[in-house]
Image 1 (tube, rainbow, N blue to C red):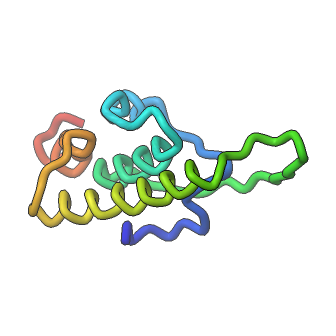
Image 2: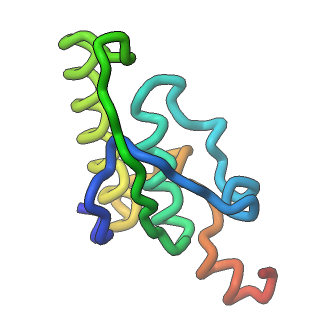
Length: 112
């Protein structure tokens, strides 16, 4: 739905440039698990290049996990975020967490 070539959207190591973090209104995002997904969507809207870093993952008995109820809520949140992205970029509806100047707009205006 995001038209990005990412092998994985939900776990792993992510690195963001300082310029990107200063440009994104991430304070408008959720304070829950779906925050990570919202940052990815914001980066796509902004026009940032997205790459992947591999990192080994090991799960141990004492690792953090979420309950079934919270995992369902997270899954619904991911689907909602994706739908909001599609509606936003198609111009059907605006969402505050996605409503900011993209790199393409600022570059065209000569501000970047």
